Length: 299
View: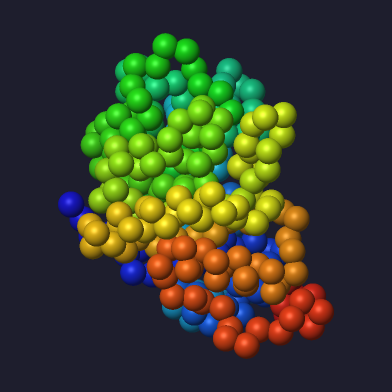
């Protein structure tokens, strides 16, 4: 199997305009991720993101709207935009979700779970191969956090993902927060899924926080990473260490941004749980001394 292009890059944080300055100011950051659809078609990067690229920071475009799990053919316009984002960033890897976002001409506005059936697997694999044929970079696929499952599944989640990776040659983007959310909502053991997944196919990992509503845990990306997710990350890290694997890891945050010092503290907590080097400044100022420029990156 090919060498993981993100191996050894350590901890990163998702690039968002609201925290662009914070990401730029992290001295140890070696990779980040940007929502592919947020990039302009002309190929011009936002200044803070271009600054990171100039420093040699790896930037992975992360797709959210290709609808790889949809029964309809891929939208050529969206494929071209995704491919252009990868080319603009000279990305060594790109990623998208094992999900669909539209059907019958209607946009869901949300990532929806794919039925774990043989027909759904066939269609998903077809769409992944179509996308890969347009890309110059490898593709990683991320299973989503789902609040429901389709009836009469023909595969377990681990079986479905393993078969998908085998059929397409894609890498796995493993979101440890999604693993926790799905297990908690299904009353299952998250460690059981980890032990059944092909961990050697993991290109990189996501971690994030969520919230409970009406008895279900929602992967919101708007809260600190909870201790149960960090505990699961410790167990996963031990498995990677035993297998001599070193996938990169990325903290996601998509709203309710706290003061910069709190985000740096969360990055430190994730780094410690994953057994990775911290990427934050050693003498970061307290919350009260963090300027708006640090968070917003308005330079």
